[in-house]
Length: 97
Image 1 (spheres, one colour):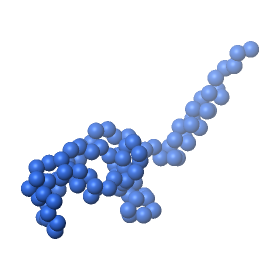
Image 2: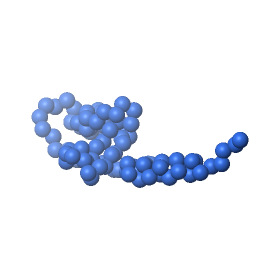
Image 3: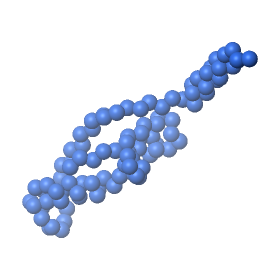
Image 4: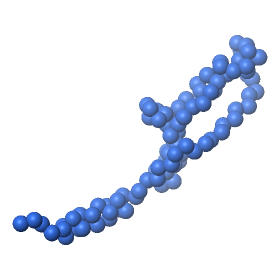
């Protein structure tokens, strides 16, 4: 079972738990990985071998991360300088009389 998430990395975040964030691309909510693992167990052969036996089970969870698309963030100072430069160029355009 495949799940798609948006991974946001912000090394300058105020809190350590906010520096690397997984979010659902549709709802924006952080995923419940325990629920995702339970869905995978229910859909696979592992569920048949474990059955509905209560107790603790040693499991192996493999996470394969494949980057599908990257969008870089432009810093606020760079975007302001681009806007100011564009405004300066527009103000130099000749006006029709």
